[in-house]
Image (cartoon, rainbow, N blue to C red; front, side, top):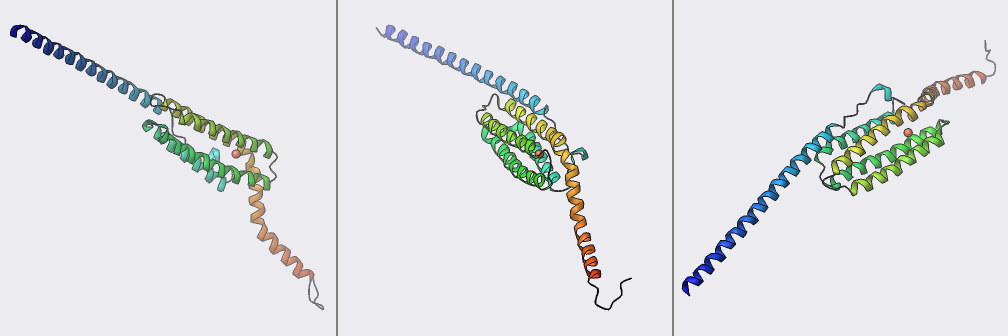
Length: 217
Ligand SMILES: [Fe+2]
């Protein structure tokens, strides 16, 4: 009887050892696969992030040598900050503040730019405003996409957003904002001429109101 119990006990212990061994091996395999997955993901992230280049401000983007250019430079800077963050994005919460900052500044800039277009009687004002409104809608869509991103696809989503933003901004400035340049130059000239014109007007009115008895030659 004792021998019988001994064998049963031995069998249970041996079984437990085998089960623990199998479980540990499975856990090791799982950890190994997870390490491999993370390694592949890191390589994929680095390659994707590298595909996004920094956008450089150059003189070809100059529209008014003033506030519009300053706004555009700020937007370039915000896009570059987003680009720099791509490699570290692991969850939407890290990407959303960048998009929010870009959207908010873009809205402020659009208001300013549209006001200047209106004042300068820019002939493409209506179409331009529609183009601005379309971008704001697109940004809302991109924010939703960013919010739905997960650990596996977040880098690709971020790269898609970055490429869209920089293509849109550089394309829009060149194609749609540059035609504004001559109108901005005219406003600047008129503003610069204003004190001169005012002085000339004073001189003219002073001479026309020459005191009685004064001979005007
Ligand atoms: Fe614009």
